[in-house]
Length: 91
Length: 158
Length: 113
Image (cartoon, rainbow over all chains, first blue to last red; front, side):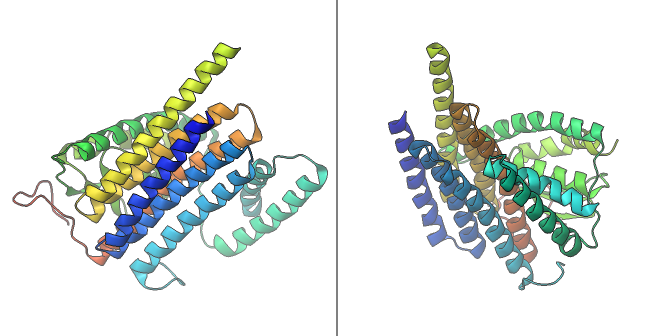
C-alpha cells in the first residue's frame, strides 16, 4: 500500500510540474495565478499522502495551513488585479 | 452575540486541530477563540450582518450537499470527456442569467454551485444577474431550466 | 475482519486512482484548452473532484481517528475554496475586459450584455 501511495505522490508531482509549464507559458497574468493555485492544490494532496506514508499527522496541519494560504493568495492576487490596490472598499 | 457566533466555529476548529481534551489545551483554545471572535466581530464584520439559517434550513442544506456532490462528479466526467477527446469539441459561450434569488447567502450558494457543475463558471454576479461562461452550449441548458435554482430557493428562502 | 480490511483497502485505492485520473484530466485541460476561462473550468472542477476523492480515500483508510476529521475538513476546504478562487480570478479578468475565446466562424448563445 505504501508503494502505491509513493507512486501516487510522484504522479501528482509530475502533474504539478506540467502545470508549472502553463505558469511559464500563460499568455495572461490570470493564467499564471491559476496555474499556481492548481499547483498549490496538488501540493496539498501530496502533503496529505506524505502524512499517511510517514504516519505523522503533523503534515496534515501543514496541509491545512497550505490550503488556507493558497486560497488567500489567489483571492488577494485576483483582487489586486481587479482594483489595483489591496486596502479599502471593493468596487 | 456576534462574538459568540464567530467564537464557536473557531473553538470547534481548535478542537479538531489539537485533537486533545486536556484542560490546559481547552482553556487556551477557549481564550484564543473568544479573543479572535471579538476581534472579528468588531473589526471584520462591524457593518455587515451575518447570515442566519433556521434549523430547518440547515437540515435542508445538509440534504442539498449530497445532491450537489453527485452533480459535481457528473460535471467532472463531462469535462473530462471534452478535454480528453482529441478533437476537443469545446465551443465556449457566455450567457446572462437573471435570478429571482434575493438573499445574498442563496446567491453565493447558487454561484458556487454553478461553478461546480457541468462546464459552467460564474464570471460576474451583480444584483441577481449572473454572467455565466459555458464550455459548450449544451451545458447552458442545465442552468436555464432552473432546477438548481429551485433547489437553492427551497433550501434558503422558504 | 481481514476481508473487511481488504474491501476497505480496495475501495480506498480505487478512490485514490479516480482522484489521480481527475488530477491528470485537470492538468491536460489546463495545458490544452484555448483560453483562460476554459482553463478555469478544467482547473476548478477536476481539482475539486480529484482532491476530494483522494482525501476521502485516505479518510477511509485511516479509520476512526482525529486525523480523519482533519482530512474531511481539508476536503470541505477544497470544496469551498477552489470554485471561489476560480470565480474571483474570472471576475477580475472579466472586468478587466478579456474577451472569451469563441470557436472561429460561429458565435453561439447570447453575447456579453
